[in-house]
Length: 470
Image (cartoon, rainbow, N blue to C red; front, top):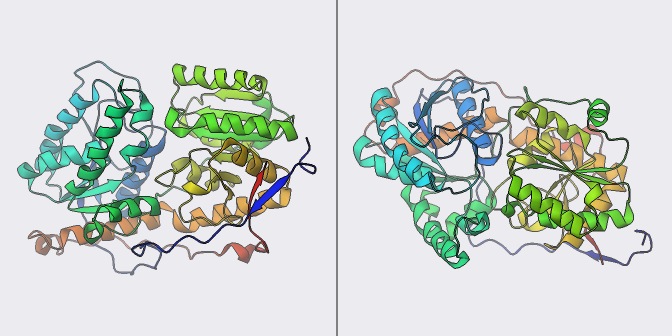
């Protein structure tokens, strides 16, 4: 059935109910006065560096702070990928297990690694005289809280996720009820372990506010990206190398674990192919996982679209970023996502038109920066993908709008300036601030002024709606 004859249900995007508390962001221009040079200990309780999600965002923040002139130490697991880490001092725990592969989610060894993180953090804090601990995620802030009595330094907790959204989906616990119960306990206790909290999306700020942490929460800090060194690919050449022609390409890039809901994307492609039979879905798996790959292929075969779904594992991070240029539409298929996905930043930095669920949006405008699926269903996502694939002018508009959005709000130099402000607010009530404030100031970074999307000649949409096809 063609899209012209399909029954179309157009649902106006209803205005959201006013939030219980106002959401604050680092959108206002920051002052030109720079901060004193700081000595920061970041805790990354995960394989690091690694080419996905949380490790990728930590890497960008650590490098940006080092580029700004601060001394940055990262305490992490003994596992990590061979990725460049500019200006950052890396401190790994001892290898007691021989584990080498990068795994997303809980493993039987991670409690041991987190226990080791406590003692490595204490050693690094004492040896280098760090001013504060910046703990990324739940396990990191647990380790930092255990180390705090021995180092007597404040903790900034970075909220990257909610355990209730993903812990059960890893399949690590035999009982889903046990996993959800543990996630509930963690969600209600762990964020309180930081002296201050810094959310990385509006959704996560609302999560912290709902737990009564408004008085210690910083404004939303966007994830940052290095636009100056972001790889760009030759679309035609890369398509030839992948055995592709001019067919419409829908792309997903990231980890392929269950919580990313690739089952919804596979289901959406079944609806897309009814209207655009030549379309292909290209999945770039940043962290290969044989079990999840088999599940994706099985679901595609069950729906009769196995020949239209391609799985690739880029050999390195740079090649993976270059491959983004292949697609006509890039998708974030996870509904109700708590944060601002790093994959979405990379899509928009590569000027790819993006489609995602309305329940996952954080600070983006429908029809201006991204195209949204109204309902958390494969049918709604498939309709949104089809709508964008069939409209070249719409693809151009949201690709340009999305790129300007992230360039203006997610340049890691700007993000580093805002993070430095948060560090200073954390340190100002402490006794050591009088000494720290007398240090030499970091050099002033000149930032380019923001550019409005409509300055480039693209007219704003006269009517913006969420579309679904029954």
